[in-house]
Image 1 (cartoon, helix red, strand yellow):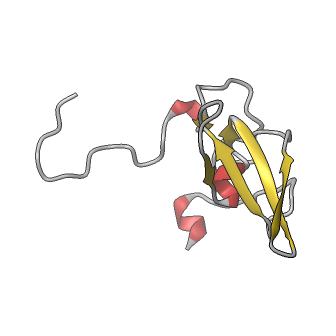
Image 2 (spheres, rainbow, N blue to C red):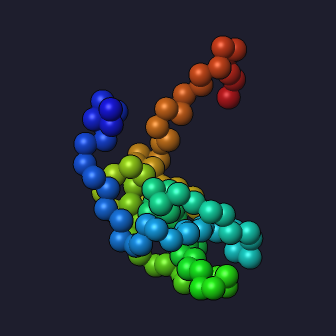
Length: 102
């Protein structure tokens, strides 16, 4: 089914995908749990959380940032958050039954 949506290649993960991953949108703001797919495309502070006998151990992550859903490394960053190729979320059109005004 994934090939029908254009997802033909396997995504590369440069970190342990079995661990908890978090991202921070604002400095001194709260940390949000991300999926591994979002984490590899997140531009902002990132960290990996490891648990040792009930105690969290935080390790900052400074690896490559990929465009969401691809293995292409991001060259231009469009603000803090998940980076999309062409700065456009997939299926970002209005799907409501009422007319949307921008």
